[in-house]
Image (cartoon, rainbow, N blue to C red):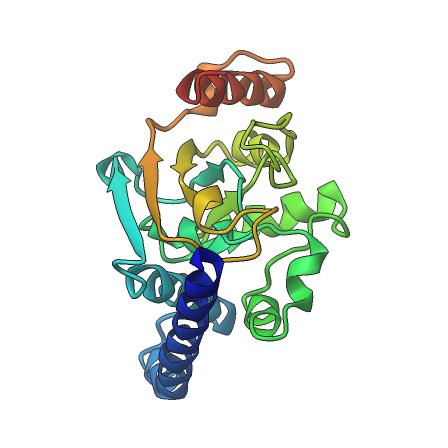
Amino acid sequence: MQRFLLTILNIIYVLYLAVISIIYELIVPFWFLIFKLRKSGKTDDFFRIHNWKYGRLLVKGSWPYIRRKVVGAEKIPDGSCVVVLNHRSFLDIFFSSLVPIPNQMVVVRNWVFNLKLFGWSMRLAKYPVIDETPPEKLLEICRSLVEQNVSFQFYPEAHRSHDAKLLRFRRGAFMIAVENNIPVVPVCMTGTNDFGSYKFPYFKPAKIKVEILDPIWPENFEPPRRSYQVKKHVEKIYREYFGE
């Protein structure tokens, strides 16, 4: 009986999300026109902000199915930064929109671009595919975006955790921070795997907490292997936060 009720609730919820998505996308062309007339930025800037706003719409519009709490937003520094997040759910890319940085370049794996409803906007936002972009090319892309005050979003575990335990961190995000001398902003998300888990085929009501921790400045670490030191330090912060 409980599974039947959850199925009905999921159908209603998905239909609701579809309706607000359609309404939002009908507004987008007019917003894009105003954006270009005001010369507010390039097309890829628009679509990065578009994706951020759309993610926030879905999450905030899901109350009370999703109850959210954001802590530490005042800690976000001015200018470009590298936002790193733990990865427990395939929906984390939506929950990450609760971090109040509109113009973020999200570094993702190639499967995300195959999502029929979202892949096109990710391509227009010029998100790089981490599996296919050589490190030198990624550094070059990021270097040019730092000059435009664009920030970067990484999931340093590279894959989502299937048991809510942290995976080993990769170094890419920290190389970007060190090469451009911009801060790393650790963001810890809890509850996302309760809402949409790897094993359970339903969306369940959940409490999502997004906590933004103090920024880490690469200049505070001595060379050589500065990116490795930053990675090791940030991973330690995460493991202490989650009691691992």
